[in-house]
Length: 209
Image (tube, rainbow, N blue to C red; front, side):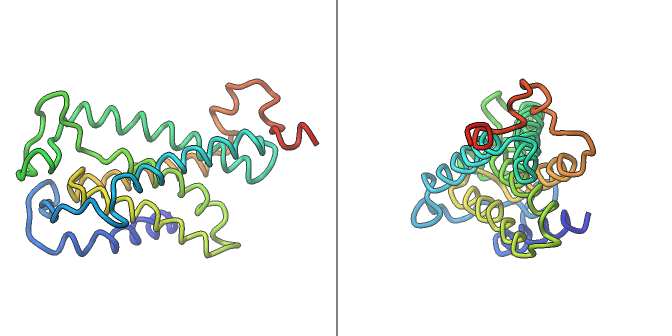
C-alpha cells in the first residue's frame, strides 16, 4: 500500500496545478484547461507513449517467459493492463460522461453512448503498466519510482487536449494502480500466462539459445 500511495501522490503532484481553481464534478475540482495540442502535450506523443508501452510489455513478456523473474513481472503487467482495460470500459459504458472537448459542464453524466470520459482508460492503463514494476523492484532499485511520471505526464496531457476532466484521470490512476498491485501481489502465477501453452513460460529468448 505504501507504493500505491507513492504512485498516486506523484500523480496528484503533477495534476495539482490544473486543480488550483474551483470547479465541479465529483471532487469539486473539474474544469476545462486551456486547450494545448502542441509540444510535449501533442496527441501524437500520447499515442506513442501508450502504444509503445503496450508493445514493450507484450514483446518483453513473450521474449523472457514466465520462468524469468523479469518476465514474470512482465506477464503480471499484461494481466494488470488487460484487467484494467476491461474495468474502465465497463465504467465508461456505465457512467457515460461527456468529455471536456464536447462541453464545458463537468456534470453531464449518463448521456449518449458516445460519452465515455469517465474514467480515463489511458491513464488507468499507464498506471497499471508501471505499478507491478514499482511494487516488485522499488526496494532494491528506488529509481523505479520514476516510472510513476509516465501516467502523471499522460494525465496532464489528456487534460491539456480536453480529452478528460481532472476526476477522470485521478480515478483512472487509482483503478490502474489498484489492479496493478493486485496483479503484482498475487501468489499464483500470472493469469494469462496460465491460459497459454507451457512453452510461453520459457520465452523465445531462452528457447532459441
